[in-house]
Image (cartoon, rainbow, N blue to C red; front, side):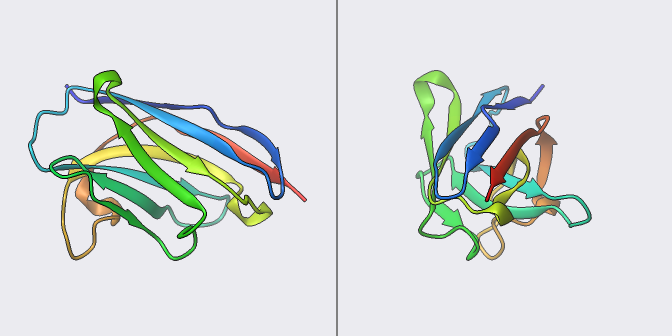
Length: 125
């Protein structure tokens, strides 16, 4: 059974940084992807980043490219999302998920079958 748990959200001032984590267990597929998603009230869930398990390649949505960095620590079965230069529009519930890596659209929520509970990020202006 695949289980994911995202944690580390909080309240940050605009321009600040935060790192959130996703503890993972039960992922055995060789070419899996671990994705980060976010959803603000009234908005659809947005894929913002993912990391491919087979080679560690990373992908980012334009909205976070250059500000967010995804990484993994395989020894700890944990994937991180370092978020820098945060802005109020980054306020959302952040989720991590495990799924199949699809090169054409790696951050499409449809490809992800196991989701963790979300962690709230609030960025104040």
